Length: 150
View 1 (cartoon, rainbow, N blue to C red):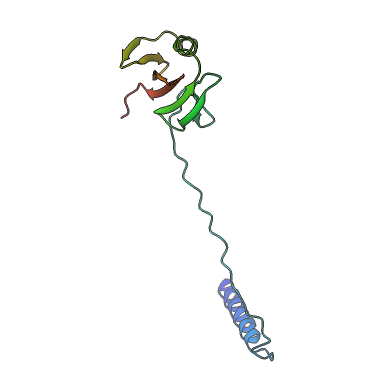
View 2: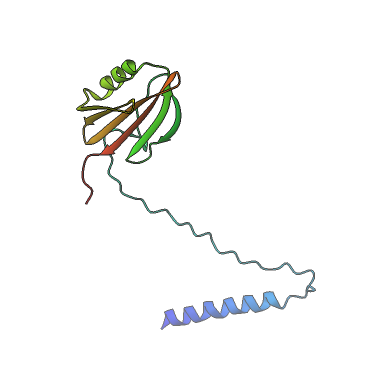
């Protein structure tokens, strides 16, 4: 019973304070408007769970490129990851570079002057395509998952 009386007293006090604040003798122009501001609502983004494969570093997938690569396209935030670039290196130098990066290619095919090399490293399939472009070579590298998604 004392709790009910205390709550009634507090409510009565709050109403009394509110009424006395409204019945101030100041003119309407002089009164400072009472502005109630709701606290900001902060919505945290949902954390997505993603599987991280070995070549992913800092949210980006590492796509190795030669030193003088002039990259014109790169998509390395998810698999399949792709990088396209030009280089002045010879075809043999590019093949050596990727052999050091990925080991021996398990498949090598040439069609219409384009050489396609296929590699397997960890759970990824890697494809490197080398094609002549004027006095340079265009290199396209694609890394994709070798595992089947459910």
